[in-house]
Image: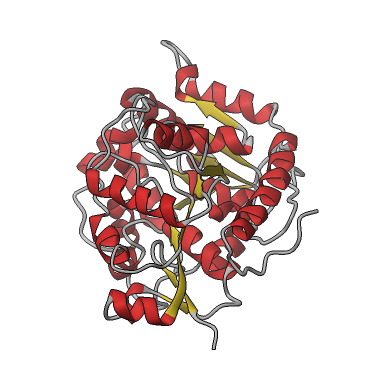
Length: 371
């Protein structure tokens, strides 16, 4: 009897029919996590899959599982403590593969302090895997600075959600987009390179949204989600952040135009009805690209910079917002000259590398062979 794969990390979906607050908790406080978890679950669906709640102890994991796969995110961030996973896995001898590991800093230093328990987990994985699958070259540098060198740059597993060896972006109608999907990282502005510049460009995106048939795709913005659910919300912080727009218009927009999804298929189906996705959320834009929809990324922190650089996604960097810059004009200029040829080429190369990575780490997957 074949043993199961233990997947420990991002969830694949949340329960259908639950309210936004319950769903948010199930998503591990960010609906974008579903893109990561769903991808890994779908790649490994040839195997029996178990998750930690289904196992009572490390001994049971050792008995029932052949290996552990960890769909990760920006885990190398100050104060993130993953000692609970390390404690559990240290009591087994199971091989461990991590995919999509990322570093997060405000200044892209490679010597930012990482919690000792998290580094203990990284060293355990380094010992038990062929390679650690990291999001980009910056994360590889951070691990190298901490003595871990057996890494492969594979991007985020959510990049391969479509399970296609190639991708093509449909740019018809991009010059006059009819429907916009917008996203903001307002809640995590402390991660950004420059909070003031980030606020300015997100205000410009909202202004663009107000001028089109637009939808706000929520990932971890609780006030916006609560407004959409009809709950009583103190909107002063929201109105202050988007001070460039009429407060009543801001509240009405998020109340009536906010969407969130219980599963990735529903999210993807909705994105395919959009002409363009734009904003500061990496996964909010990535799900557009992987479904052939144009997207413009706004790079505001080390995580989005690392990933956008790797995949060749069209982007605007906060550093371009020098004093006096007209954010709306900059976005319009970038959209007018946007090209997806680099992303399409990068995707094909990264897909090939990712399939090889899975094989080198002994994972029985169902991804089609590279083109």
